[in-house]
Image (cartoon, rainbow, N blue to C red; front, side, top):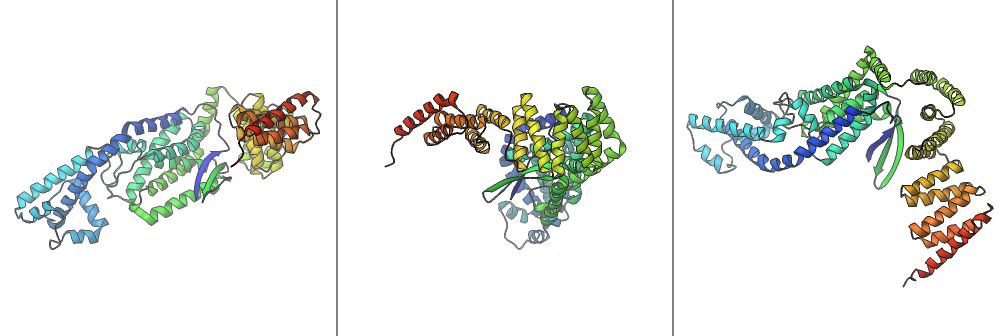
Length: 501
């Protein structure tokens, strides 16, 4: 099964998430600047590095008295510890030589010449490593460079690796930036990336497998999100054997499960996995600890107050009080406070949006649907049609069936403008079925018929819809000419359709 997070309940902030957007931009720029070079260098340096590494290992296994520099010695120790049976076989001189180089080296008994060969191989091995982008800037646990704690977090191995990390970064990052402020958030992200890499390094201190990618830092954001917004619902898309769907669940239900899975895979596959599971675990734990510490220290509250002062925005006292009640788990009291506020200020869209989410958490579908209707109405009034459509989908997701006819009709027209024609026809028909005696039903049938005839080239459906409009119980004398012209045009279009052979 594939699970992908689509959004969460709090997708709005008080100001632009500049740092999050900048981090995403830097990752994309770094990827575009290095991806093709990394691919080219992989084909150029990897075979050479592999050959040199094999020769160095053979020489070290058969002549343990030879000395190596620190870099090569760690590589040889890594091989001997990770693959003891292979190392034992490699140290045997009775086995068949792997290549011509080994045949020649077996004939050489001069200790000085053998040491010179080892020095040359060591130099070539390190040079091949340091000549590549991955060798210089990825994190190698056995031999980490100071700069790799930063640069490894901005390199990615492929498009899917990059897109996946950036999507998770956006979902968890911008809301944390909005609460912590740009300075704290920036410092957290950079430190989290380094800690995640080091955690992996502690688990595999002798590994020469390079790590690259932002997933450790992103995992830290997920851990912080869990501590800071445990009850916030996340909408997930799932796909299994060509069956797909969506569901919502709180962060405390989804994110710990992800963390347990990472621990399981890290324990099961260890260093053999192509995914740095322990870097994810380390980042996740660091994020949880840091978020808890920021909350207890009061730094988050100070940063949030400073943001409010900078943007010149202060929430209505009633909304602040409702949020405080929600933090205390007093959901019923919070809902009552919000309803009292909206009764006095019927255009308070922020209050309705909070009430919408609150009713979902309270398992109150009727309240959620009523709040969704009001959010949709106010968003349409503000010409925010995408947000209005999102509110309609929220209404449907909780089992809502009869959306107010006038709003529904306006949303259908929005679908037309967005060129979502099949969906527009479907919604027009649903509207007509739900309100057969309302004027909007007649307009919906005519609108759907027009789309089928002129835009979708479906004359059969167009004729059916226009004929349904003609039979509508809604008085339609003023629309009769339009309906009859539609029936005539659909009939003529049908006559032009070639008969099946």
